Image 1: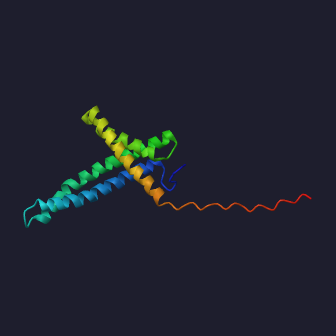
Image 2: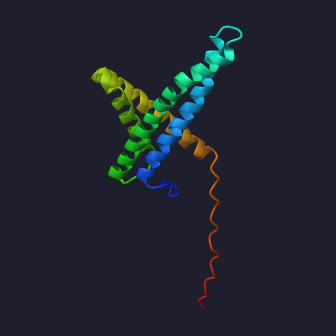
Length: 156
């Protein structure tokens, strides 16, 4: 059963596209988050300045963190797809495992393994929910009608 999405670009372009999309998502989300946080932590009358200052200081960092995660995940996903020659939910689960582990390598092997398992489980939950939702909302397959059999010739 192949779930290949042939509308996507080849892997090198997908990696760059996912990196940029993840960076944008992190920068926009970080802008909203740190804008509110900066406004709340500023004195009355300085809230706009505090908000803009917090956005300028922290939103690009969060965008970069999201971008690195998205680019690394997409790189592992493409590598696993190329190795396995299959496109199924296990690719994303393994890519999440590898991404979580490689991002936590600097903290030591125990932390890397814990992070890898956590990311693999998280991606497993995401993929499982996706499979359940696609099956739940899929159109039922219409029943096939059997062709009418011609009457058998009578033997007289």
